[in-house]
Image (tube, rainbow, N blue to C red; front, side, top):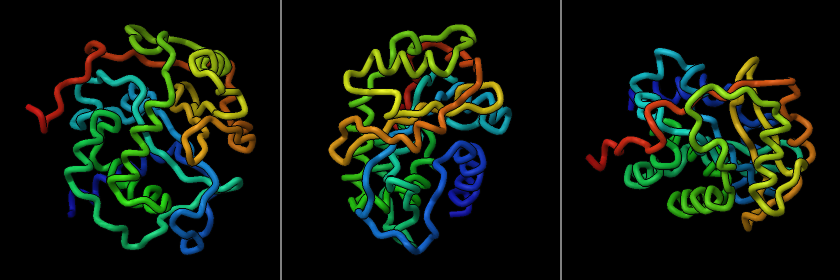
Length: 231
């Protein structure tokens, strides 16, 4: 329990630095009462670079073989978003957590995402994470970002255009690019409850406006290491 609390605090400081904005006041939200989802895909090398030495013992960063990973699938209102809709949250079985590590290679993050966002979906844990997996299947990552062996300098608009080209029906008003002061951090894509692309202009307006950002390379090859629970 102590390790889980410490892990969640660390992940909150790092992952949620670029988390969703404009939450409602805690306690005002009801499970299943939301308008759409946001699928957040994090560029893992940027996360690991920002985390520095603190991240090296984590599964995600130890070998740095991950490219885009799932940060979360977030229920949203047309303005703002619900959070922590059940306190305490229903227990997330460890078996479900381990089943998601191929997409979300950070156990503490998975627990956190369930507690803060999954509980607002109105779904049981297994159904929520099945929806996360289905949402990830919907979005195709442009092939030019699948095997970066050196740092790539890009304009955020180029990244947006590449995702649009790779995904029929996706538009600039259906997504946003998140960056820090120099790196691309995340691509966030709006989906209906049925996991079709949909417009979300309030989110799209917050897209990164920098002229250029960097995408650190995927290190150690393109194949993720064998997860520890399968060794």
